Length: 165
Length: 165
DNA sequence: CGAATGTGGTTGCACTTTGCAACCACGAGG
DNA sequence: CCTCGTGGTTGCAAAGTGCAACCACATTCG
Image (tube, rainbow over the protein chains, first blue to last red):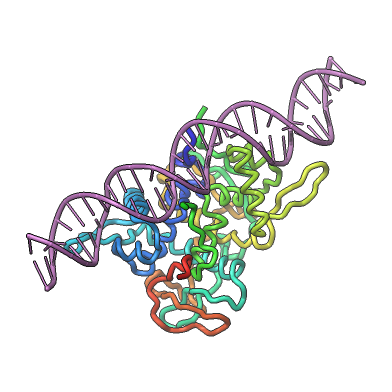
C-alpha cells in the first residue's frame, strides 16, 4: 500500500522533520504564522489553498506541537509554540539560500529585514564550537547512541531507519 | 485539474524552494550528497526509495542545478553544484532544530560534528547586519521591487503570487 | 564462450494524496 | 426570519507515490 513514507523512527535529524513539514503547505503555514497570521481565514486567503487541506495541516501542526490553538472570541487562533518559533533559523537559512540562488538579481522579492534598521540580516555562518567558520567539507556525521557520547566511526551517511526487519 | 501547486513565480523566497525540495525525498538526496554519496545505487540503497522515484528526483535536481552529473568510468556520478552546496546552512539549521525538538534527550541520533575536533557545531545565531542577535519579533518582511530598494511598507505577509488574475 | 550477476535505469499498475467544489453548522446583522 | 461571513467537513477526479517487473549494458565467473 503505497503511502508517503514516514521517517518517524529515523535517527537522522534531517529526515524526521519531513513528516511534519514535508508536504509543501505546512512550511508556508509556519512562515505565515511568523508573519503574524493567526486565523483560519487569514491563512486560507493568503495561501490560496483549499480549506480541507488547510484544516488538515493546521490540525497536524497542532498535533506535532508547532502550533497551538488559542480561544479568541467566537473563533480560535493558531499561534506558534516555542517549538514552532524554533524554526526561525531554518526559515532564515532557506530565505537566504533562495534569494541568492533562485531569484534573478533584479527580480522582485520579499525580504526579511531588521525591524529597527530596516537592513537585511547578516548572512548566516556555520561555526564550530570554538567559533571557527566551517564548510560542508569540514564536518562529518557521527552516531550518538542512546544516552552515550559521540562515537568516532566515520559514518558516511545516515541509515534510513524507516524499515525494521 | 488538481496538481501539486507550484510556487514558481512566488515573490517569497520561502515558497520557491518548495518546488524543488518540497517532495520529501529531494532534501534527503541532498543530505546524502553532502554525506559523500554519489552513485545512483548508493542513494537507492541508503534511502530505500523506489528507483523510478530516485531517477525522477535526481533528474529534477540536476535540471534545477543543485546536482550535476559527472562521468565516472562506465557510469555517472551525481555531485553537488555550488548552488547545491549553498544549502548547507539550511541543513544545519534543520538538524539543530530537529535535535532539540524532535528527539528525546537520550534518544539515539546521528549528529554533525566538526571534523577536526569532533565536537558538535555551534548553535546557529540570527544576526542583524550590525551583528546584533535578532529573534522572530525583531524582524519584518518588506517587498523589494524589480531592481529597486526595499520599501518600508509594513507588509505583514507575503502574497501567494501563484495565481495571476 | 555463455550464463549469472550488478548497475542504472524505464514502464505498468495500485493505491494515496491533493485540490476544487459543494455542503454544513453556527453566530451576527438586518 | 432570512441572509451573510466564518470555520470547517464531506465528495469525487486528477496528480503524485511506491512496489514490482522489465530492459540494456557491462562485468564476473564457470
